[in-house]
Length: 500
Image 1 (tube, rainbow, N blue to C red):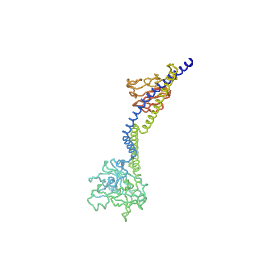
Image 2: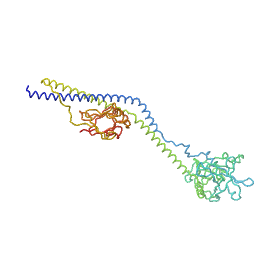
Image 3: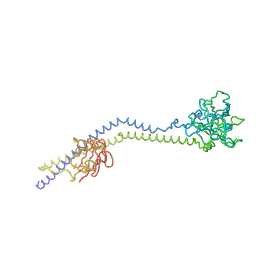
Image 4: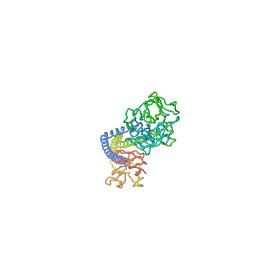
């Protein structure tokens, strides 16, 4: 063999040996790193699967709780927001009225109290004008009868008894809690056929029971329906309801309630030849006189509007509490790793297995090539070492953008940088009190083969995040192109990888 050719072959084979050997070493290092990362990933995957299996029952319990909360519907507490009143409850809104002369004789009628609040003490009572007509004319004493045979003196503050109106307003000396105000419904809303209740002290009842004490227990409650909604009896000019609830003398001035317990009229007249044809002055006329005398009262419209407002407020509070409870449960559920995350984790582990096998194959290929070149070199009887790995001449840097090491630049071309708070295991050591940084948070190195940086989360508590906000799966390496950024826990600890 010519000397020049021999030298040429030696040089070529030497370069080949060095190159293949170097690539074999690089591949071996990468294979070893990949093996280590795969081992960590497998361990983390098994741990995640165990945690997932253990927490599946817990997740299902939370899902059931979420559905249970979502299925809840608001129900108004009728005991707190009372829309209607029974006849027995309305007996507290009726009182007997007496006009008594010095000899002890006089007239009897019924009345009902007026106030602005169901819980307020009452002082004003409404009755018919004809019930207190003798008091007006002859100066008889006037009383409103309460419980325990208590006769409370009263005075007349409004009186009209003629063809235009038959109404009087009485005022007792002191407000009392022994009677409850009525709630007045506008008579224009009343329809024919509505059920009604009359409550009072009919004289026919006292004829049968001479021991009557004229308290609530002595009241007579009768029911019927509205026969006609607008009747003007021949002897008067005011508008009335015709109804068939039984009344007689003594019911005069007493209330006529609708089926919800709201006042719609005042019993005033009876047909002399029929006990089922009776008349009540419409509530609209009563309200007009109360307004004229500046005596405030409760209307059913205002009462129900207030009721609806209270119910709506309670419903809104219920819905807010419901939404907050669902939000809290969903947040709790989100903290538990789900099956999709495990599947993705498993897919990445499988991918890493392929990379390990590829690196292993490359290592054997380059090692074999180097061996072949050695044999070839021996054949030409000359061995010459030297050469370098396939290198583009650039240096790989880890740059701290934000945080404790902001502005620092580290060469990681030939070694793995481990970042965390543990001085024994980390090459970049954060102060112990740095928020969000785990003892062994993450690792990064430059892959000479792929010309990319490999970032791995080592099981940190608060996570490692890529520049696009994606969180790394612990133990599974992620490839970063030069110029990429990543953060530990949050943006306050941000890094960038560069080559130059």
